[in-house]
Structure formats: structure tokens, C-alpha cells
Image 1 (spheres, rainbow, N blue to C red):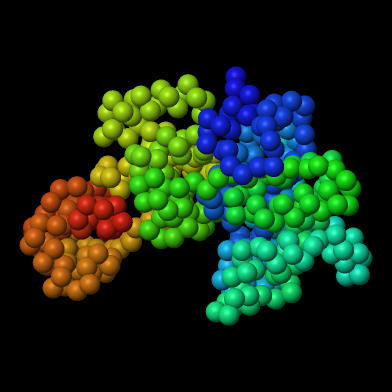
Image 2: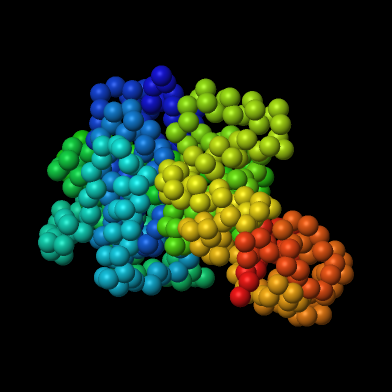
Length: 415
């Protein structure tokens, strides 16, 4: 079994850190924390990358404190933002906190961890007390030197409020509080949180005279495009099934690029080095089978959504790829209807009308052109006729497609 430092290096989790030698992580267990602000009601797969690194720390014996930022979420992290955030209502923050905590429990199922909320220790701190205990120990030069502050204060910048300017002080105090109350000596964070995290290290050193550390997860980059990994055609890929359905989630992973799939397997799954090497050997021998992408999609979807939703996602994907829809039923049928338009037709109805009603064509003229150009298929078979036939319907339904893309499909049901 690899040590933690070896595991982090092999999986590509080595990035900025205050540790001079990562082998210190291979010694006695330490308490560390990782936090997510409730700026939304779900984590994205960027957060998931950091969470998977956290799992490596846990599985190698370190004690995890998982923070939901009820206090920091009331302000919002300004780093990377060109203008002031809109403040969330207290009800929105409460809902988001509950959602993030639920996702922690899913991603870290079976592991030992503790969930905390920084609102619990901030709600009773007075303004003067905070200035004396925190503000007194944070140099203005350090805060003014932050890149996002400089960009906001430039002549063409949007400016920055005192609240957002003070955000890093709140996060710095989190680290101090958790050091005092939980013995936390390490913050694990995303690459974009480096500056905020260093504030806590500096604060603890000045107030307590103790050396603490930060370890950041690198950004996952799409090797094909060179941009930050984690976007789909419809935007961010969320862990919440109401925002990104399990089928969409599964398909995002199964459509990943060949150039980066090995990296994604290392970052986003718990598969061992030997297992991933075996999958990649199989993938290189027959790239068309996409064994690596299938393994990635199966493992990440199972981790986030569980076995039942994984089964439904794979079933729906098979239907969209051309499997017979005759026997789809129950949750899988509901999921299929959620992924593509579902319309009603008679067993001799006009195909062009179904194309228009489903949104696969903008007009009857365009629909007829698609049919004439041999761009329309029923249950995977090309058709150039005007009307459906009774034999097209399998158990009262058929799959209508314009072109080859999954998204250009519709479920047509008798009714």
C-alpha cells in the first residue's frame, strides 16, 4: 500500500503547500479541515476533486473536520469575482447548508468525519471582540496585496466593500477556532483558496505562536482544451440530481476525452494504481470500446448517486444509444422522459408533426426536409416516409431521432 505522500503524488494531488516535506503526512494522524461555502445548494465536480483528495487523507488515518460556511456564506468569497456578490437570504443559506452537508455524507459515506458550521462560533462574537482578537493581528499590507483586491481597486475596477474585503479574516478565524477547539493544524483547500487559507496560518502564528499548514488541490484541467475541467454543454456539472440528473452526470464522464481520462480516474475514483493501470491497458488495446470512460462514469456516478441511480443512468443511456424502448418502465421511463422530450402521437400520425412538437424541427417544412435528407430515424432505423406505422411502436412507444446526437431524440408514445 502506498503512503499518503506517494498516493497524493501518483494521483496528481500535489500543488501549493506550506509543507517542506510531504513525508510528514505519512507519520502520526493529524486533524485537518476542509470547507465549502453555501453559495449554492450543491457542490460542483470542482469541489468533488478536492473532496476526493480529502478522502485520501481520511483513508490514511487523518481526522477530518468538514465545514459548511454558514458565516462565510453570509458574505461570499470575493476572490476571482470582478464585482460585488449579491447577498443570499438567511433562508437560502440555511437550505444550501443542509444540501452541502447531505452531499458530504454521501461522498464520505463509510468514513470517519465531523461536520461543523462556522456560524456556530461567529454568531456570538461581537464586533469589538473580533477587531481585538483578529483584526489587530492582520497587517493591512497583507490584505491589500491580494490580487483580487488590487484588481477591484484599479481605476477600471468595480470596487470592493468592507464586508468582502474582510472575508479572508473570517476564514482565518475559522482556522484559529478549529486549532483551539479541535486541534486542527492543517487546512485542505481548492487552489483558488490559497490566499484565504494562508491568512489563517499567519493568524495562528501571530496569536498562538504555532506553525500550521495549508495543502491545496490543483485545478483539474481538460488536456484537450487547456481550460478548467468540469463544464458540460449545459454549464456546470453539479452533484445535486435536481441540477444535473444522474443520467447527465453519467454521460458527462462517459464522454470525457481520451487525453485526460487516466488523470480523471486517478482524481475522481478510489480505484487502486493496479486497477487503473489494468483499465488503461484495456483502453489502449481497444480505444473504441471506451473502457476507461465507462469505468470512470460507473465509479463516479456510484459514489455520488448510489447504485440505484447508476443502474437507471446506464439504462437510459443504452436507450438513447438505440436499445429497444419496448421494455423501459418505472423509474427508468421517468428518467428517460426527463432527458428527452416525450410527445404523444397516433400509430399512423405524421412524423413531421412529432418532430415539430418535440422541438427536433422548427417547422413542418424543416421537418420534411430532415426526412427527405435521410436524417430521421425511428428505433435506430432511417425512415423517409411521412407517417408512423403501427409496427414502429414497441409496447406503445418509439424513439425518434434527428441526426446522431443523443440530445436530438424524442420519446413518442401512443395517446
